[in-house]
Length: 352
Image (cartoon, rainbow, N blue to C red):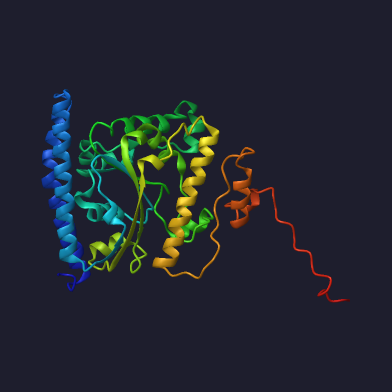
């Protein structure tokens, strides 16, 4: 409606409206957060959680109205008719921009319970936003670099333990846990740096998703496999959203039923770790193929997949060999099995 206005004016308008929406609705969330430790009995905890759920959906609904006011967005969405969640679910999505968080709320609306994201612990110090996320029960995780672990070996395993504790907090009321399995936002520069085998995705990291499913996998209805893209605004889509220049949003949803969810001990069961890693990489390859064919219209090509993390046992060797013949490893320089050079045909070889 107002997308014809100059971009600087729309940036100011969007920031003001979203800030007012966030600050006003944060007040009852703060009050609920103060009441939570005082009202320990289950009925009160469920009532507070339902209150948070209502406020969160109100926040996403108002943000949707703001987006409609300042942007003229065309939504290309498929698979959403399958989404009917009464309990909890896990959303597995590729990650492109901060806009993903806003648009996930816009896409699913009231079809799913309140969405919660794994957040870096440093985000808790952002004014208002950090306290709101804490009050909503968002899981905050501490990540430790290799240098920090070498300096203090006692920190090893702390991030895994914090993941487990965060997941346990999510089973008391219906929740939609969002996992960006790539662990970072996709950019062509990052893709080149890590030598990603996918055209439009970063390699997925299996650990956090596998541990989360190991904790709550039996208590959720399904996994929602979400594929996102911004075809007209591939670079800095969140800035484009603020400027009122977001043109198109592509989203495909696949529902993976509870019976098909892979749950196990990712840390101690090597066979399960191998199978889960292959399953997630296959899922990511399908995402990449869908983006190539439906969004970016790339020329057909054989998409590469990362080298399996664990050595397959005899029962899995045939499946792994077939997969390795179809794709190249993520790190060819570390692969000991180099393909032999092709032998020239004597019939066509030129004589000296």
